[in-house]
Image 1 (cartoon, chains in turn blue, red):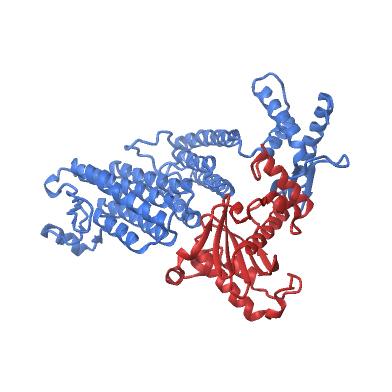
Image 2 (cartoon, rainbow over the protein chains, first blue to last red):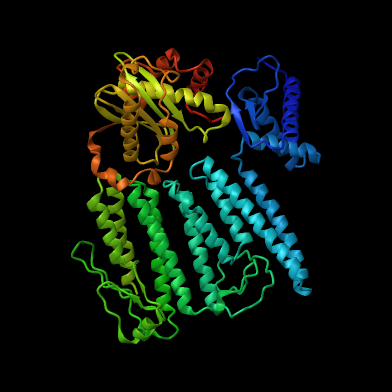
Length: 416
Length: 198
């Protein structure tokens, strides 16, 4: 079936046009798929439309894809001009055939950055001439964009397991469009909770939760150091994600939490970790034998462990109230870890350790919380899994986790 | 975490007879669904045929897991899931379905029945409900009942076959597969992949 170059070119151009017409006539197309069809039949178009689903017969792909790919490359290299309509048709076809194209996500980000720059310009004007209505409109537009991107990422994540591109894009969007916006991060944690519960071996989904936790931690930290700010002026997102001293108020105009008590902030962080650990335990027990869940547990505990150590070190001069985070005995049922966690302002009840007297005042204020994130409790959890499970893989993961606790966590605790 | 198909079959002397089936193909591309369904029927029947009476087995094929229970009275059920879905819950589901089916459909109809003549309607509901394993069943209850060591594990479909039998031959002879599906299978085998374009 040797077709001349001209015949191929004519055929391909017809197909590209057919695709473009299909989209124009049927804006409700909700799905695109490949139809297994090794040979062209009856000189018919390979583009098929059934019930708002667009199909492309497979025989044409080997002609179509190289052609459009090449055309786009030439355009990018400025060797071949394409007018706007042709460009739209070509990229549409290309993405249709290869939605995995990283470039597609890049293009999306490029567009978003363009929009953000426009926002910045408006925001700058607003700072000079405050306009509450304009701020609100901007804010809500931004929220809409974020929401839309989250939906796109979520749909893409469902289609391929551990879809790195989709989840990276999701992270990018939050980093660039929701910096310091606690509400968005919390909402995202809530929103992906059911998703990760039904995709327990999707590592990217859990990695996203780790990212959200870290961001919330950083934001809490930065707000504890920033001065109180009641400013509601929209502030364009920073691109540096590591500044601890950011005084940027949230994009949606919420008041900064800088005026909350230190104790409340620590309680918030603690609750975050507690909830995440609970989720992890629940899934590990319900779905034995998934390494992703144990890996997630490591990440969460590691984060918690280091955050706690940082808190202990930055003690606002009250070092005499703090003790090191404990010398932990090697693993085993006889080992009793002597963790004593004392934060500057919030006391936590520790297993088998009674509260020192100077904390009783705080007790009466009612901000006492049981600390379930001790090393001891981690060991208790692992032991309970080992004792009850009959799944060989689960057993191995539990043993490995126990080893990690002993070698990594205990060793780091000793360093203080 | 997904269930794709749930079927009830009668294991006859030489082949398994499909009595009723339910499918959830929503995660597959629209244009592939009819082929996918045919392959799931083909697979379910083959597994039921090659599993001994009175046993449970799990067969792994690529990213799918097929769980089967052939009862002592030859009534069988097969569920096809992904690799995340907990195995225990699958077997609870199979037990439940067989129990319900045998109460609702007279055993005299089993050897010769087919989906058009059999009036059991529970499969679709069960398939839908069990998409969320924790909502569908208290898993702690299941832990105690099932002895996992008695479930036979097969790492590929091939291990179900007799010596010298080829899956390709079974596919081309199968009455469950239409011509398009058979062609699709041939292409996929040649490319050594199932659904990739390039």
